Image 1 (cartoon, helix red, strand yellow):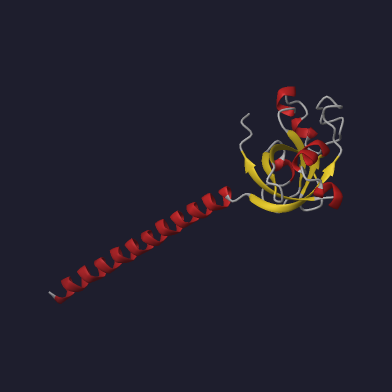
Image 2 (tube, rainbow, N blue to C red; image 1 turned 180 degrees about the vertical axis):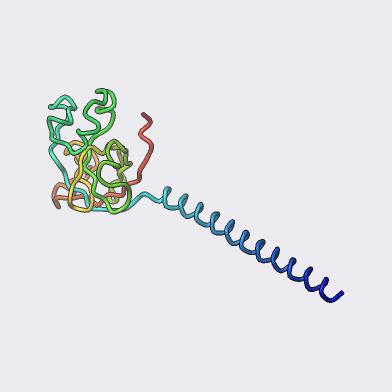
Length: 163
């Protein structure tokens, strides 16, 4: 009788261990899932933005003509795609980098004036911020302080381009 009782206790202990391991696994999976969601939705930052003279209108929105980094991947996009938004170079601290950022859109907001625009990433830069096309820079800089200082403080958020 004692032997039978011990076998039952051991079997119960084994199932208890499996249950505990399974519970830990499920908890870890759920935690990982929520972390991925939080990171994916938190692709925004506040950075310094300078201006760049892409002048896409004068170059017929041709990425090759302005030697944009993303031309390798996006030069064959239709004119409607290339001209839908103003252009920017992206080298922000948060979000995809290099080719993975090409063609993505940002909602950029001048933190001082509140002016905002949607821009498309067509280039890369090295200033840990943005290089906005001069026309976008000027529209955001409604009070002229960015022109006077040579830069704007911009908040950016990755958004759906709607393409």
